[in-house]
Length: 530
View 1 (cartoon, rainbow, N blue to C red):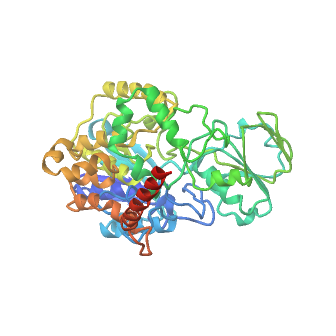
View 2 (cartoon, one colour):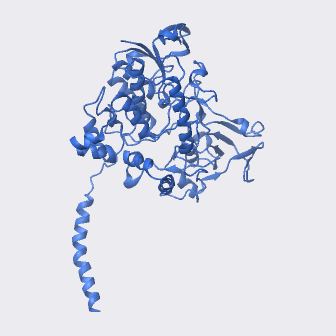
View 3 (cartoon, helix red, strand yellow):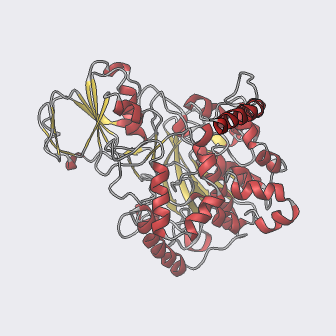
């Protein structure tokens, strides 16, 4: 039966949710407070309240073969890792391709989302929106929340005594846009995440000096991995996920640590994480190690306190004459238009069954799309989440009982504490998570069947990248181009980097081997005659 569904947000997750809901035959309306699609990826010169904010130099951390929607590959001419303007362009192409724009109400803010008076029986929601100063109430059968988790900054000033006396400038990284205004400044970055590392490396080219303070350290990975291929095409495979599950934890930890230290010793650079075996998301940065070894960025421990112009660190060291402090301390999960008790547990932490459904609702008609964190790209994750959520809302898929969902969440907390270092984290293993959700909707690749019917494809599905196209090979809304996209993914990756014709390595190596054989033979005979 056709449902009337509201989608909140027109970023990566919102576009996926909108498309999946429309494909399933629902009347769907998407509310977006800005004037364009893209959400986080729409750069603005100034941070705006209620909207995600990025700096001008942001690039994707996932390559284009892993960062696309499962049935819409990123154009061949795009680079493997994209500047925010290019990725925003791709999102616009996606919206145009699937005719999504006419379902989006731009410059419309969601004021409140509340259960209808008959929610227990119908599962309906009353959604109040505002556009041009006028408010409107509309009742929907279901709501898909797609506003992400980079909107409300976490600025823990209470953890830094003396910051109120500091006479320099301090701010959250969401207000940072470009390095020019900090030329010649002495800058302190607090927080070693992707943003903190990016900003530290970028400022080091123009600032007088940059310090990067970290409380617990982090593994730092390069986007460029073995043989110059994108890191995620090499590392995010079913084979690697299989090894992680079957190997003893001690051996798995050793291999993981060796892999992370392959490029440089994190211990020598003062970056090694306190919990080296934790699989929390590493930092992706290609320049930080070079900045540290060149002395333009200095890594420091956590700040103990501030004075009017200095920062005193936990090891007793002091940095004087600090001009600016940038807190790269992450974001808080918040839905100001929704009652917190719906998505948060008794510990005031977001608690969602499989990262999507609030477990204690009387009716499963509200879903959160795109909030989980994994090493995989957001577009394929949001696509699978949205397809499952819409299937549940339409009654095609069923959720377990409330008791079962709460029990599973408790069990997952223990597993996450062991794997990611924190129990309340929304982090998850990409391959395992995608396989689990895709199995709910009947689109998980059947490796045994593929091995019997299409061994070439089976090899790529298991040993190759766990790419988005795998989740449109079969099942509802399968994509006929998925097989070819999987088999050609390495060709597209090389095509995005090689723009000059070069001799094949095999030609050179063959010639060199032919020349070396008689030379080595002559040397050997000469040695025998000595």
